[in-house]
Amino acid sequence: MTTFVVDASVVIKWVIQETGTSEALSLLDGNALIAPDLILVECANILWKKVRRKELSAVEAHFGARLIEGSDLQLREMLPILNASLELAIELDHPAYDCIYLALALKENLRFVTADESLIRKLRQSSDKRLRDMAVSLSELA
Image 1 (cartoon, one colour):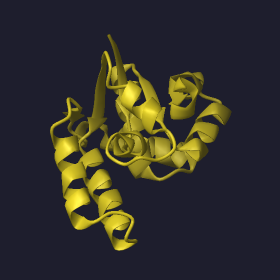
Image 2 (tube, one colour):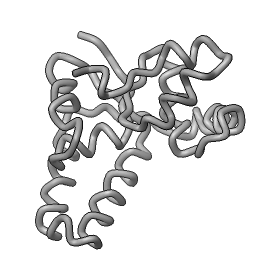
Image 3 (cartoon, rainbow, N blue to C red):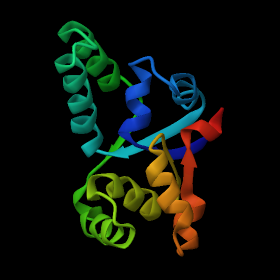
Image 4 (spheres, rainbow, N blue to C red):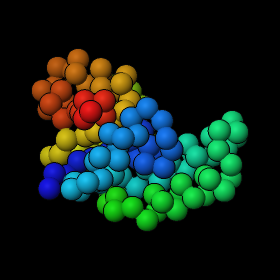
């Protein structure tokens, strides 16, 4: 069993059919998946946006939220990695709410899976070998 840190761009694909859904779902098979507890708010916000844009009904959004609640996703508290996420945000010039996932992956010495290709590019261009090596694009799992 492999353990990965995953972000909202991956988890939301468990409940919404979009590009990368099959790769995101494949992570559920035989892997342990962890994320900072921020992921719940991020996923709720994505579902809300989809309702607002009329891409989902409210019923569908609530069903998606229940599926995420019932998943085996292991949550970690954000407070112990807050400063590390800020440090990464400044270093990478990237939003801190994305960097909280990176800080968790570094703390737990795990690979980080995301569908955020701009973040993957930044990590691959980093002078820090740890950041370059930890990133896995969801599309690479295909």
